[in-house]
Image 1 (cartoon, rainbow, N blue to C red):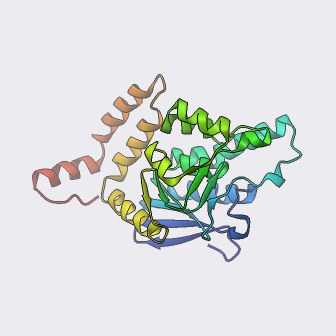
Image 2: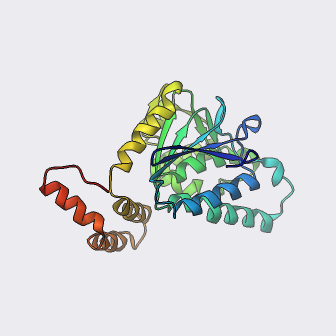
Length: 256
């Protein structure tokens, strides 16, 4: 990454750590950051050496503290619709449907678009200092980067309504109890724990993981079971299936 990049990348073997670099703005999402991340997500689909991405924020205060409100303060309805559509297609849906698994390492605030970014990731780990919420209704808006859909899918409609309509923040322990995050760790251990989780993921079949992501993301839709059946069948045609079965029968670890 260049020195002026809004996102830095550090490689840990097959794991890429992407750090959002707008600490003075608490890593708030602006158009340039969304575009840069979107390009990186697209590119990583073709980088076979990267088997997992950890997404985190710079500084101690925030993962991402929200969207950059100044960018859309004067928008009209058509501009607002275009903003949501562009962001979802460019970044949030791209992460959710990525062949490469994404882990959100949430240290500090994850609010508005920041929580929506974490919700798009496949696994979420939070520090004990994390605070999460969707405060858009306090601005006369609703979440526009997939938050109404993904939060409800992850924590249930009732809890999603509670968080969205009240605009309240939840602490890490409550986020864990409702299933919003999978783990809570002390702040200094956040990246280490995320790397440990990434190590588990990279030991498994990347083809099967990509198929699982497609199937899980279709859950709740009318075609969800058909997608699962289709992806299950496709796995049999991939070399990872042959290697996985051979390793099992030979009582060794698979080499994916």
